[in-house]
Length: 303
Image (cartoon, rainbow, N blue to C red; front, side):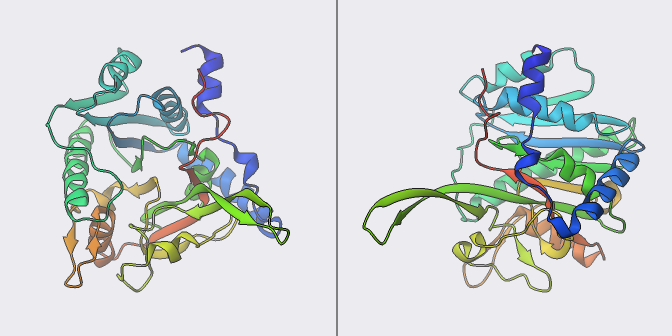
């Protein structure tokens, strides 16, 4: 990849999401504090992927840019059963890069769509637990301070400033993201003329649990949640939204899984592991400034 393409592919539209005016000074103070902290710590950045060929150049550039924020970083990718060229493209993209650990497999397992059925989080939890096992092995020769888990199919990417801002805070076990998806919404004016506008939705309604309750929330209601950059991180029982930053020692001994409640609702793999962390006395936060985009931007799908 040329340097020009790397620059374009790795960009995130930070300027589209300025911090609230009243908290701007504090937001940037914490961001700078996070810069000084990140350059003194090691991370493993990890994620699962399957059939991501359309966003792979952007994802690869974003992973490398994220790694540059830290003292040292290893990137662990688990890919399985792709049939769109992702498998081959990953090997070509990362060939000879000693900081990339690429695990690939052909399992024959079906690919899931967006569903809240138990089978999907059980399967994904199994894969994420495999990654945790590999991270434990990495820690034997590369001391790991933090684990950053990222959804590798994010169309619009993730905020680097949001990661740095997260590290500006003290006394947390996990910082999770504020994920947006933009949907077209048809509006009928008083004159009877239809037009379209884009509605911003809070994305990961499956993983989100308010602090103090494991109730599975209504997805349409949770979609309406709105948090703005610059607002203070707040404690939750569970959240993910495409990026989670974890202290190694607080996460590594916990287990991914899933289960079905008596009323038929499902606790997914993130709520499952966060439940264990909460029981261990950990504090899990949602940081409104740690923005992820599930919709494409002007930097998506550049040739």
